Image (cartoon, rainbow, N blue to C red; front, side, top):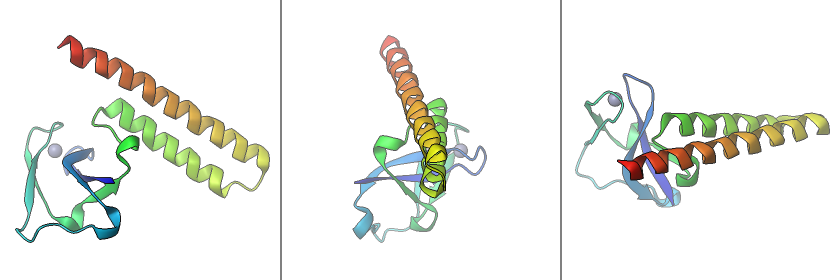
Length: 117
Ligand SMILES: [Zn+2]
């Protein structure tokens, strides 16, 4: 399953619509544009299938620090995939794991903070 995101036009951050869907049969009900409350700029954003993004729910978070780590991890994984030398590929794969580890650390902190209230 993939998580449906839209981008906040003010902050550029991605926001979860709370909808999970099968990327292969991605289709929205025909009842027109939807709205989502944006946690970053506190406004309501209207979205349609056209400006929705699909992501792996395990590689996305609404905590900005975690999202940044996932973005870095994806960048490094793409660099590893296009690296010509084995040493470069190893380096980028190692960086990808570091960023994913950092994301886990931030998630751990965010969970603690949430539980603390
Ligand atoms: Zn917003």
